[in-house]
Amino acid sequence: MISDEDEHLEENVKVMENQIKAKKAILEEVLRTLETEKDGSNSVKRRKYIRDILNCEVSHKCGKNDIFSANKIDSFRFESNMFVRFEITNRSTKGNLAIRVSTCSTESSIRWILFENRTSVNTFPFVRASATLCVSIPFCSFLENDSISVNICGTLIQNTNQLYSLIY
Image (cartoon, rainbow, N blue to C red):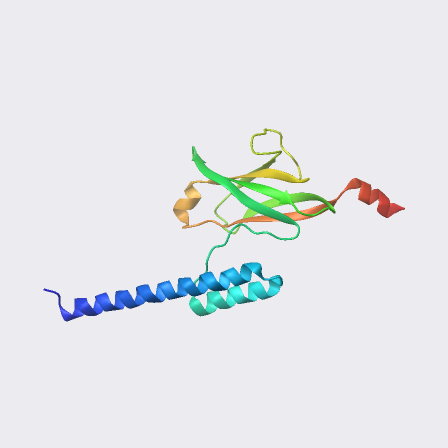
């Protein structure tokens, strides 16, 4: 025998499920528009509105910009570390790309290295056209936090032949 209170709770759950479905549909439609939008600043503003008004945010694929792109290859646990590999592509023709990796979490100490490609053991100090970035995060960091954000920053370094041409 179901009480009136149980029926009321079940109705509330159904309403909330429908609200979540509606939010998801709105987000999918809006994000489809945002991904194809040419003006990046409007896209950022609109994502902020979505986050503030709907109180939710959809994690999006690895970023793509004019300087470089980062695409996740895979991730795996080995001993006491979690490894994530990214394919970094230098989109600029103006120079090589120096990579810096950090995390927002102060407790998490990450290590990273750039490889020539997915199967190579040759390391690179910077990205010419493309390279594989391997990031190591201590697994205990995931016990302390639900998720860890990894920031991949790229800085263009002018090619030496461009530097010589600037001197003349």
